[in-house]
Length: 507
Image (tube, rainbow, N blue to C red; front, side, top):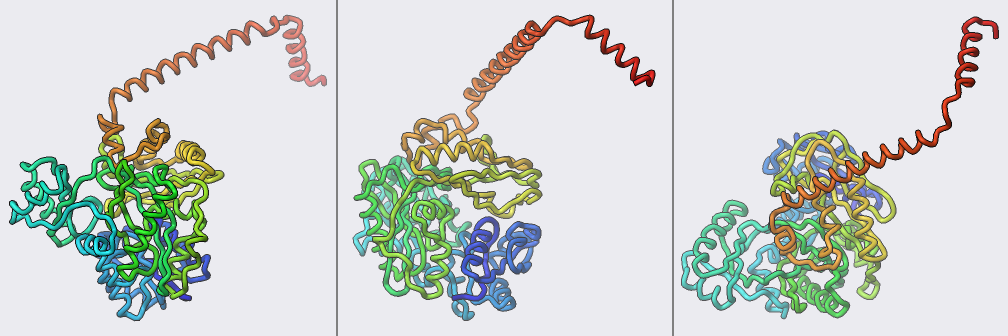
């Protein structure tokens, strides 16, 4: 087992890994930029090293500095967390070449699965269903049109590299295709340095369901159930839950076995996630593989009882899987809301500044993975994620009920957050019925999140409630006054005599 692990990340995920290291008795080291000098992960770690200015390109993404800190601190392994360099095959290779252990899959597996076209080819060659489509070249418009017609409109134009919705365009007709190909290629080149794109059939109102997998270096692999991640904004997940209300035992088994087959084919080892789109008829299509720990991993931990960070570290150290497929049981239901410094009523624009007051919710079935405290700064340099609020219950109804209560108790002042958005969703009948799809926000907030008409109704209702409260309070006071015993002149006279005696000093 490792003696010391360098955590090449920041915020809540760095703290999550610090805690995982401590449970295993492993020393931990974190890094920080100048903007993060007072961050919570710096205060909680055993050791912390400054690695550069605030921009990630000058700090958290500089491989040489991370290797230098690992050597200087005596770390023998590096955990990348998620984001930054977590899915960078070159970084995994650099870590290996430095004689350290990368806590993640082998570089060749990251390289193979990180390229969406290569991952599609691999999936198809092993019988994994994929969405109809293929690579295109913006310079060869006739061939692109032919492929789009073969798939059937609407289609998606997607970047081969990267993720997070960058370089993605929905095309509803032939006349939109050329413009989308050029725009998608330009955006992909700017974000990932790779302008290759491909066309894919656009599945209407699919569910985004992913399978958690874990593999060791001894040929063993398991799937740990699914996560429903359909509520998204611009392809960014907002609410995740496990299990999915849409997935029955048979579909879970088929998707799980397909996911394991896909990662086995890539020579995968460590934990990972295979993402699928699922249509209304329960047909599922391979989307991509995330070769890292997911943001939403806590919901899987709660329903399976398996500590995924612990498992990651043990697998990277060469230990065999601690579980067999038959040991995996799904119990209860878990929901995660991503609490972000974003103004949901203003198109989710990021909010920055100092958190002047911070109070986390607690109680049975409530978990908060947070990276902030009072006086923390939310800067424009990094992701707006403040924390992950997760609730667990014996049933989905219990988990929703606890989430609504926890959201009501959460207090964050100083920056605008999306807590109000999550509170609204937790009250929506469509969410309670499990009627989810990647179009959930578009379908249920047709006028945008800041629905002025609905706000006006709420304001009017609040005004009526306030007036009624004032009226009933005044009636209550009158009732009390009416029920009070009449004033007694004898009592008043006795009090005046007592005061005079006290003032005269005769008592």
